[in-house]
Image 1 (cartoon, rainbow, N blue to C red):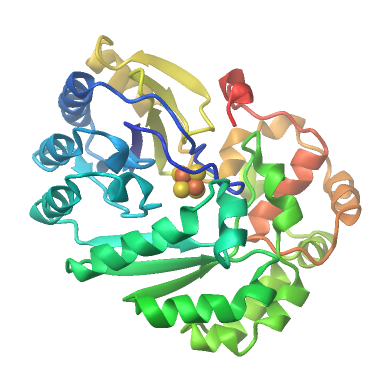
Image 2: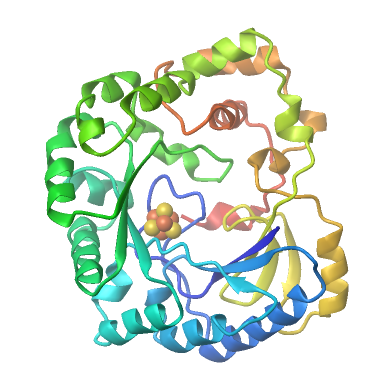
Length: 357
Ligand code: SF4
């Protein structure tokens, strides 16, 4: 599977936990967007795989989003994967928001999602934009009133214990079609440590027992996963001799690429680019396809490390034992990447991201 993160217009927030390097960015001119969709369609014809692109980070920031959606929905060999997540800021400030929503529906996309980080002040602090919470909830309400399915992702942080009743009130008011509960992962992105002071602990999760069921979550499953994915839980697995090689050596069959607003095509997810393949408007597509075909998959972030220079499991365990033991991560792998970051293990990610965020 190949997915291309197609960045047309940046993002309105600068979330501390962002693992796709969101934040304000230049617009891709509409002529370039349309040309790049054509080029991706041609490129996809060289692959037998499932090939998709995603209009990321906040496509409604683009003044020509309606034309972009229409072009993106007419491709044959490459599909536009609509994840629907939005901050709502781009949509709510538009005069033509009803036409934009209609364009989404006409193209077959009727589901949108928002992420909530606690009450309004705490949400705004984590996404680093004043007023972001109010706009996000207003956008979800507006989209729902126009017939959209609304999904809410509750992204766990240390504020959840004190903000639980505010979260419940928001959910009761919005009545979303689906509620998800997410513990932020940790990736080798250059700014990822910024979220660490906000990370929830086992105490946070214990304090929201009762609320989790109210939020339609499987309380026992969340508590169990949280415990397993604390640093302490991961260290226990390391000491028990868990095999780490599968994180770094296993062949992966999903490849992520990123297309920047300047039309440069990169290998790697947004913010984790490892190789520039050139300007999509001008590169030889057949040659680029053969380069891409030879690339290993990179869905899991183990692909961003060189197995030859990894520390020993003992060194990693010692580094993790120095960190707060009860902090919760999205998965076991995240704890390993947290430890590698603490040890300063270099990744294959290009230095171009050092200046971002
Ligand atoms: S997490 Fe999403 S909304 Fe937040 S900065 Fe990243 S892309 Fe933007």
